[in-house]
Amino acid sequence: MAKAKDTIFFCKECGYESAKWAGQCPACHEWNTFVEAPSQKIPKGVSGTARRSLRLNPEVKPVSMSEITATERERTQTGMQEFDRVLGGGIIPGSLVLVGGDPGIGKSTLLTQLCKNLSDQGHKVLYITGEESLAQIKLRADRIGSFTDNMKLLSETDLETIESAIRSEVPEVAIIDSIQTMFSPEATGAPGSVGQVRECTNLLMQLAKGIGVSIFVVGHVTKEGVVAGPRLLEHMVDTVLYFEGDKHASYRILRGVKNRFGSTNEVGIFEMRSDGLKEVKNPSEFMLTGRPENASGSIVSCSIEGTRPILVEIQALVARSGLGNPRRSSAGIDYNRMNLLIAVLERRLGLSFSECDAYLNIVGGIRINETALDLAVIIALASGYLDFVVDAGTIAIGEVGLSGEVRSVNLMETRVLEARKLGFQTCIVPKSSLASLKNISGITIIGVDNVKDAINKVRK
Ligand code: TYD
Ligand code: MG
Image (cartoon, rainbow, N blue to C red; front, side):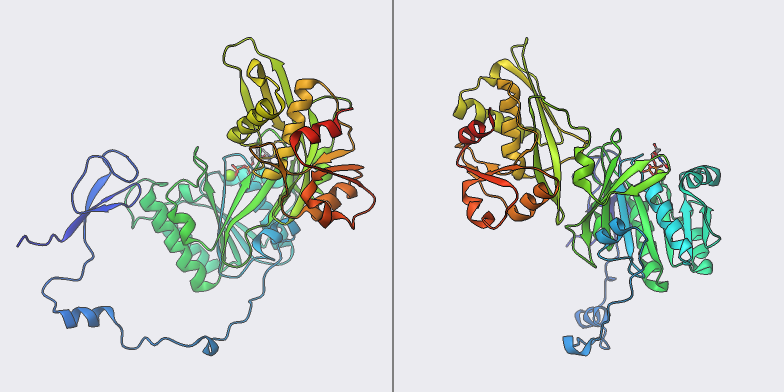
């Protein structure tokens, strides 16, 4: 029988394990990343019984649910309602939170503001940066305001030094900016490589749970939109938040993707100003400022972000194309969804979009992936194509099916009430939703069956 090997090969980048060496990793397709390492199997020559006793600790005993006493530990308020909402009501002591986002989106600003609020309330915080010098941090901090001595800064990338600093300072909250710059001498690879990220996160996790400090870790996002390093990072931490938005627009959304201590369908909305991030308490008003008057191709719809309704303006520009292959572009809406809706218009209403370029945009740079916007997209495109103006006080909500039928979406009442609150007079909804909306007064609700019906209702 072949002798069992006591070393294995694993990929430095993604951690993939294999018995044989390979030039290219089958999991992450990186070249020359395989290294040999001792396997951690139980040594040979140990009998079956001994093996089992190695694995099983006789002291370990399962307990029944009723024997466990757990009280919700006090959460620390961040001083930003939008942030608290996404965390599920505040910071849990000893939690490890990953804040992901594109470079330059405002992660460091958000966390510096968090530190300011916490230190102003008398909590001890430690901000550790591996990206910027202390002077750079100071420049940013000066834009945000003045800081008390409860906030301490450290510029360091060696995680062991950081660990001892945290152990001696014992802050309530520590910030690690960013995980990709940190390294642990224990692990191989350059900072930011998978092995390093995994080792560092592990260390931080143990530290957080061990001494009860809450740690916020910044993670940069790759082109594909995931936190650099493996998915593994997301599995290891308690909470994953993404900070997103268009760099050229001023609003930012903080979205919970995973939360061991709360729900994930909450978002926090912020605006980037010259003096830091400001919370946006009324996002609909914010999104609709500066709407053009009497312009074709524009209509408002209502999306639900988390549990909150947000009104957004959808704009379409349809122009005769000089090319055989007309140009299509969408910002804020899924490109394929737009093509599908254009096909519905072409087929069900006979509008020949194949001769036209079409551009679609959600104003404000917000990205929305919700079928409730379909009807408004259809109306905006038709309005752009046929060059008619939709009344500015009209809003459209509904999903559009492939036969051109308009279908109901969830939380219809919440959406219509938000439109009424912002002074809209007419609401175009699917006919099937009318029954559930009959108690709403103060706004004219029009039910439609299909897209043709809808366009006839808004066309003057
Ligand atoms: P930053 O927090 O450094 O981004 P990240 O840590 O995610 O890489 O902030 C990036 C941008 O925010 C930067 O381009 C400048 C802008 N900014 C403001 O507009 N106002 C401010 O008060 C601050 C501090 C930054
Ligand atoms: Mg930063």
